Amino acid sequence: MSNKFARKLAKYLAVILAVAMIAGVFFMFMPSLLAEGETEETTKMNERDEEEIEIKEIANKYIYQIEELIRKYKDRPGYYKAVKTLRDYIMNIDLNNLKIEELKSLIDNFGIDKSEMKKNPVFIGDSSEMFRPADNLNRAEFATIVLRLMKVDFESSEVWYDAVMKKAKEVGFMKGDEFGNMRPKDNITLGEAIAVLVRFKNFTEAPGNIVGVPEKHWSRGYMQRAYIDGWLKRIENVKDPDRAIRRDEVAALMTKVRELKIDKDDIDKNIAIYKTYKDVGKKNPYYYDIIENSN
Image (cartoon, rainbow, N blue to C red; front, side, top):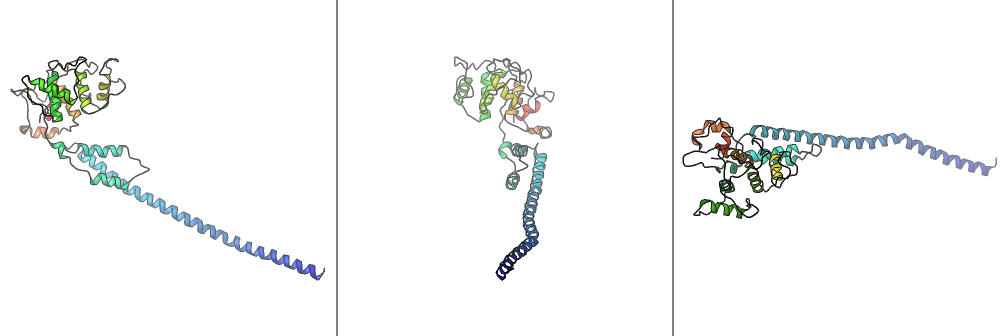
């Protein structure tokens, strides 16, 4: 072997040895480098998990407080809208996207709505302190009730119902028949009463016919809307929208439409300060509706 070849071989061996040493060092430290990277990523993941757990724990505490507010105030006068807001939120809450600030804000803003406590009687009764619960209402009487409900004043007229029907048509909740006649003295039917109240609430007619009124009846969409919103639960014979509606049934409708929460215990304990009627007793299934809507 020549000296020249020996020197070249020595150089090659030196390079190979150097590469081998570098590779050995790299592979020696690679596990620790990888472990360090994994540890850092694991730490970040653990921190995120801990943060999510903390958010859920705080959120659960707020949700518990909200459920307690609902339980405590659901039947108290003046809290109907406040409780409804909480219930609607809980019913639609996204458990995978809990928002602490929203939950806290709901609790902080919860409180009594004094406007719910203001008296706005829609029934007055007659001069003999009689309500006549089984009597039907004519269209002018029903229009008067709705105008009181809306707190809309109307001028007096020589014939009392002329001014009432004029205002009812002007406001828009009564339209008259196909000839434009308002028919003030005619009994108002169940279908007509429901249609007026749906318009008053600015609701729309609803598709379907769960109520079971005649399929082609003009009031079907209004009756369906009333059914969906729970207005008809205590009304008899809802399949006949052309029948006359009684005064006590209108009281039950008013409770639903006005979204009133009746405190029966308060009425019983303090009946002396409530307006009552000689012909309405507790045997009437709409007793509390009549009292509440008369005070």
